[in-house]
Amino acid sequence: MDHPPDTLRYPFAAPPEPGTMTAVAPGIFWTRIALPFQLNHVNIFILDDGDGWAIIDTGIDNKATRAAWEALAAGPLAGRRITRLIVTHFHPDHIGLAGWLCERFDMPLLTTQTSYLGCLNISLSPGAMDAKPYRDFYLRHGLDESIANLVVTNGHGYLRMVSPLPPTFQRIVAGDTLKIGGRTFEIITGDGHAPEQAMLWCAEEKIFLAADQVLAKISPNVSVWAVDPDGDPLGLYLRSLRSLHALPEDALVLPGHQLPFYGLHKRADELAAHHESRCQLIAQAAHERLHCSADFVPVLFQRALDPHQMSFAFSEALAHVNYMLGQGRLVWDEPNGFVRRVKAV
Image 1 (cartoon, rainbow, N blue to C red):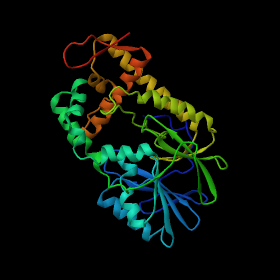
Image 2 (image 1 turned 45 degrees about the horizontal axis):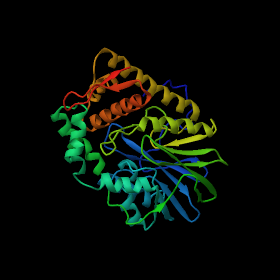
Image 3 (image 1 turned 60 degrees about the horizontal axis):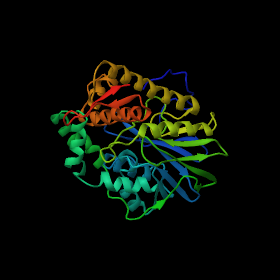
Image 4 (image 1 turned 180 degrees about the vertical axis):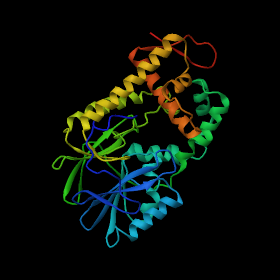
């Protein structure tokens, strides 16, 4: 999702170079880990934690990411221990290297219960998403068999880029406070992009570690997953966006991708408007003829998609369909065969 460049204010014009850290506030540092996807990086934040460093998020599990962490440990992090790892949510670019890092640096993992169990259920069960109920999920919503086969195999390879998690973790819950160095952070959780995604809020200094809930120039993916086929992640996401208005507009937002920014309320409102425009595109198409959810993918994404991108695009299209069904803007057509179709009201 693009937006006008003057909508937000960016205190840092460029990201840190690989292997380096940029101070975004006293004792809070920003580095980046590369990803082998179109979204080619994840932001990592490293906080002064008294006699060591607290880390937020990890990158995926591959040789390049492990090497990047070894370089950081031997470079800007050298001379101090790593005290703990805080993981914001269960997507592999954020939790993927958690097990390896916790073992390598002998530190605890702090995350939400949903993130820990969600990772165990999906990322660490090889072949699970290829099971018949999940394959039928894609077929029932209109993906043809060849594309469905690609999505449940190649498309879900990303979910397996995770090292074995530590056998135990320390649970963080919305409303908890974490003392990191000389700061106190409140744990805020949001839904839609990932269930019980953890964000950290320092009210005294107006610093908001937002994970993937609000990003500056793209819309975080909001997907229906096969394990919860009738879920309403978009409704949950919009509710979470509204709740962010309780924080001040001039908070420094430190997101999971792209540049830090000021303009939290503006960006939350832009994201909500973006999803409403998507709903309007779906409504217009559904007024013209019956559609299965897969038919809406080219309505929303007018470019060629590889299997990885198709899995997200399809699941996001279905998220809009489920949301609009709940609103009464779409209804299911009378059953007619295996594939389900909707029409506009």
